[in-house]
Amino acid sequence: MTPRNPFLVLIFTLLTLGIYGIYWFATTKGELNERGAQIPTAWLIIVPLVNIYWFWKYCEGAEKVSNGQISGVLYFLLCLVIGTAITSAILQSQYNKLGVAPAGAAPVLGGQSTMPPAAPVQQGVPAQPQSQQPPQQPPQQPPQV
Image (cartoon, rainbow, N blue to C red; front, side, top):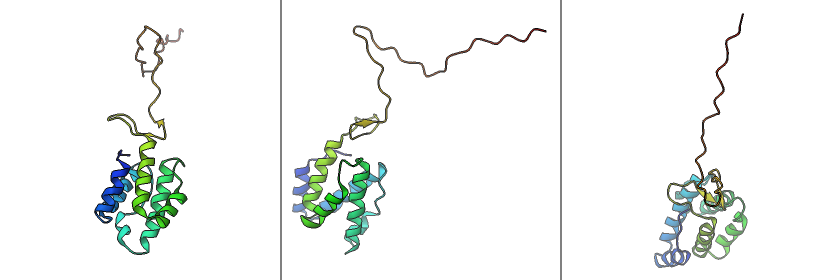
């Protein structure tokens, strides 16, 4: 997830009367879908009553991608009770805590990387790269007749 300042997410949403909030939800929806969530098109945010379904799917996707670190039901209720402006700032804070992979590295989510662990380094001895080729077998002798 792209790191953003949660305070600025809230301020921009309030200053633009919610337009930045729609943009933020659409952008983070794309990031969540890239990580395995199944959130429908963000155009549903602007459709009355259907947007409630969309926010449910969004919160469900956030829970799935975070491996349960983010409670979908809790954040859906927060959207309904305190509004999406404050909820988006809280969610952004949670997304920032999930972790961000450096450029070119495998994505890190919840502290779990999909890359294999690095080879151990002995003190004073640099690690040797491990060969990815299978060990070679000695040539077979032809059968003697």
